Amino acid sequence: MTSLTRPIAAIAAIAASSRLLAASALLAAVATVAPLGAYAAPALGTLGGSNITFEGLLQGDGNWYHEDVRELDGRDDRDLAIRRADLLLRGTGPGPLDWVAGYDARGERWLDVNLRARFGRGDRHALQAGQFKHVNSLEELSSTRSNDFIAKATVTTIYAIARRAGVGYGYAGDTAGLSFSAFDREITSGQATGRGSGARVWWAPLHGGAQVLHVGAAYVTQDPGSAGTRVRARPNADLTNLRLVDAGQMDDARRIGTGSVEALWVRGPVKLQAEAFRSTVERDAGPDFDSDGAYASAVWNLRGQGWGYRGGLPVTPVPGVGEPCRWQLALRYDHIDLDDGAVRGGWQDAWTVGVNAYIGAHAKAMLNYVRIDSRRGGVDDDPAIFEARFQLHW
Image 1 (tube, rainbow, N blue to C red):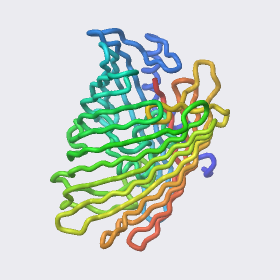
Image 2: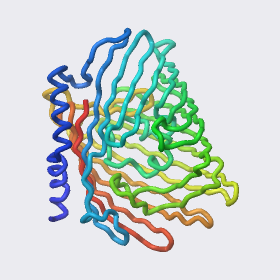
Image 3: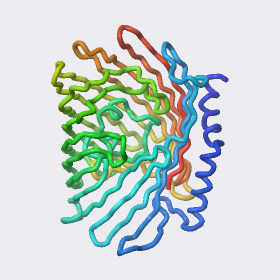
Image 4: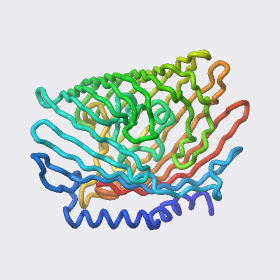
């Protein structure tokens, strides 16, 4: 099979998988009960003054590896799998309250499970308790269904706190906002642990019409607990278990502090986004370990559609019923450096080129080509990966 036909065959193979067809049947069944609008999730009714809707996200992925030194997968250089099967119940009301309960049936773990109360003029203040995404990483805080690339940037996967049980406060104005949170472990047994807290601030001096200029910063500190910590990353491919960069297990870690800065610029159909992180692992026995990384990306809506922006986050409007597909071209450069003193975790650069198609209001197809340059322990390992995804969301 040629390099050109591999990603096309990937979409066909994923869409034909029996499990994804079953998921498609589920979506069709839901649609017959409650017809889906461009932005509306199926309404299930009202209970206790709360209007309840049902949301879902189903993703089937394929990875095809062109390996260099190490094997990324032992099954004929490919992986095909259902990546996500997220099911969520969301409630609005009574009064200023809203809540969500989500579960990833593929990963067998809880997602957002929390209660939030909005208050103040325009409901711009919010208090939240339960499991939710915490304050650092613009990419992680953005909607998963609208990811620009199949795999998140390396720095996002390493440094973002993502979902933990905790409490938080946030303020989101038209041009500025801030948030604070304190967290502990994930509510799913065997997942991330460690108490911590963090804060994020953002400012959008240019916001209106077809233009957005956004800058922000965040800082998170956490106690890794008795399990210690391990800083490592996949080569921008979610289905492989191999890490080309790995700083090793640090059982003596007592505190982790991570700072980040973020920037977003939108003009018409073009979106530019970048983040940089620096993290310090304070250790009891060995010297502190410092690591850093960054990414920069550009996405272009080929038909000229614009972007949304709300609460300090970019929004990708999906096509409405009867509207043409939203085609996108995307490019990202991604860097991580895990070499510090005696710890030689390695460094990794990744270039990703992508094509996305939002097919109506509830389907999306993605193709990515990833080129990796990495070095660890004096050994260069430079694989390439074709990635494909077919997604259903409602």
